Image (cartoon, rainbow, N blue to C red; front, side, top):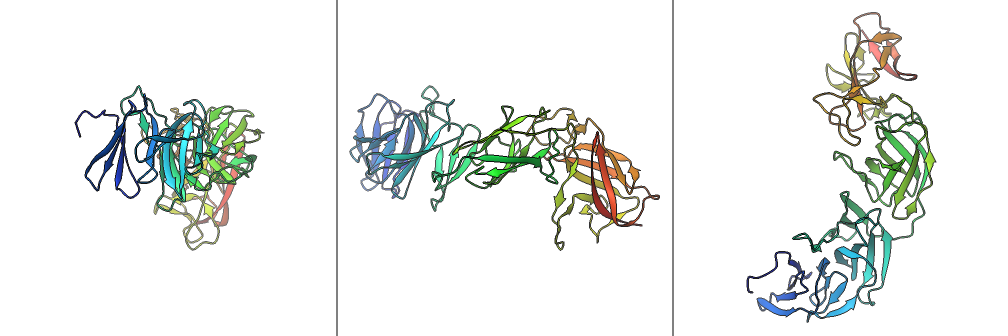
Length: 406
């Protein structure tokens, strides 16, 4: 083939690999046949082409909102509006993503190729990455992929990657927010910068979690906002969402959840300046979770068989210590250099004896998790199986029990 091909040309192989479609922004379409090892068709019936592209079979090909036959003649126009972004074919149905513009929420549609392009659609929280003919290489986009078993789809949107189940368009009830608590001990006391858990119904069509930083504000196609500000998300599921309360949140803010099935009720909740709460962790061999208190001498969680010793250094992992200095962007991990210190230093007591605080601030590498390092005196601390370990910061305090030995 003559080497004058537009650099924005897109190629798509049919499922069998026998045919390869070529599409160019100027409206030219080409078809390569592997059996004859040559291009067997080329047409230019259109002024331009853009959007999603793919091959339904050896005889049918999709470019934008058009279905081409094996002679590369447009044989069908798919119903729907807006620019197409991605397309995949599974179970004789074409699935595609569209949006009227980057500012509009997008749609993900199932299109019946054999039935004049009839389709069912579900709304996306935001638009997928759209074609842009003014940018070299962006006239055609491929922002949708299917798993091998066709049970899930991955789509590329402006905020990142979203995974949808194949039954994404099944009827779902509108999302409902019931309560907001801190993600450590699930009490209602929450503070800026801390991790929170939101409970409700129909909050996400899927279970999804992330460990990437900074945290995304769109996860599993759910999007949470507080006073109009997007909330960085850690985990979403139909009944629970975990995220970080933005550092600039105060007073009695309003929370709203957006999902493909609709917009939730508005929930107002109270935010304290500080609200320390100790996380709990599972330890092998123990039936119940224990407070996230670690001994520095062995870096192991304090349990009945690994008790606190006098003269120990302890690290407490909590949420809710509030604002830090220097400032850390919401959704970003705590820095290691310089450390982000809590603006209000907490007071820590063990059995009523105040412990010197060596550090209190964001745990380096974690989002919304704070670390408090304290020194246990060599004497004066009571020993026992359930010695109260109390953290007080501002007007709020919390207590857990630990075993202390000499």
